[in-house]
Length: 452
Image 1 (cartoon, rainbow, N blue to C red):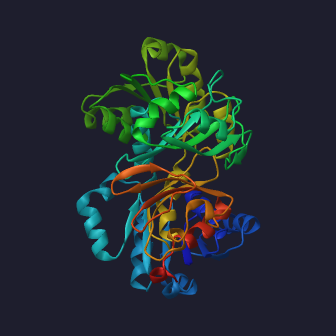
Image 2 (cartoon, one colour; image 1 turned 90 degrees about the horizontal axis):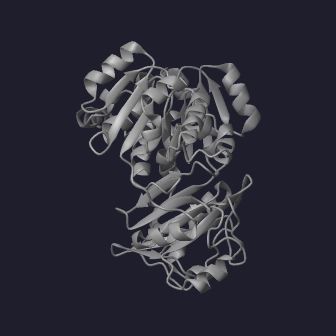
Image 3 (cartoon, rainbow, N blue to C red; image 1 turned 45 degrees about the vertical axis):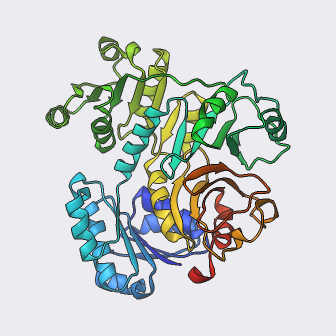
């Protein structure tokens, strides 16, 4: 696929590095020579210095032959204009990154669609939705649902004393014959393992597990986790993520939101209906104590500073807060943050990639999730008549070693994948894959009709 990425944001950088390694022809257009030099030294793609809203620059990028344009400047207006021009000049599909809430109303989306922009993506809105989902599934560090909760992907940390520690996957399956879940990845000491029968669970492993709804409680029991109720929530940072999270949560929880900017605090106080907005710096321990931090069930640290978010979550843990969620934009901090006890990390770059990567696949992808804790993706594919994945039972498929099938949704019922299961046309199939396996998995789900 010929892909044009426009912009010099961190989202553009992440997408360029991700997609250039997946057998795509990627061109990156950005105004900064220094930014492009950095990209060229880390990946194999074509770069063009210039303004993506310039028609000559777009023509230089051979826009008429471009299958997908992703405009990911920090300024949403530039992205909208880039996408509009690219579509008019012949690009097949255009995606614009926007942060401004007014651009995401149904009316605005309809007008942008009419003008030729195929999709709008808001990293902040995606992150806020992830926060809301995590507060309804309190024991999971990360969670993603497929086909209206028929199957879920959950990340759980194996606590000391968990019943599965020291056992192989085969032993666990034999001991618990009616398992309603399947481990698809183990992350251990900065290494990601696609688990096989002889792999042994260890204390502090981060395990990604595909589960049916009725398997969640059993899964949590075996991992040493327990569900707990959340009533009181503190949000630190009234930016786009914090404010949208508050708006989504305030109907169901008692919310306190901190923002140290007086003007922003006043603005949010007018917009949010039942959230208590406090003008103050949440790094101030005295302020936290005066606002009863010890009575909080969850803290969401969503300022624009990753270090501040990590610090606030660590302080919250000292006061006994059960659930801590930190917005961490520096990917290098993710491994460290997990090791020091922060429950959940959210990264807007990865959240945005989750939305966009489905449009780079030739097979039919229903949904995707770019995972925070590991350099991997989970896909929900729609199996088509004639595709290779429907020809043999799972155990006989030439499936990439860096990928694994976790479950199948068939006739509106979630099923955990087993070796003798044969995938049928119209099944929705949940696949966990490391980047090296993306292309191989895509080919297995590609039918004769959508071969390119």
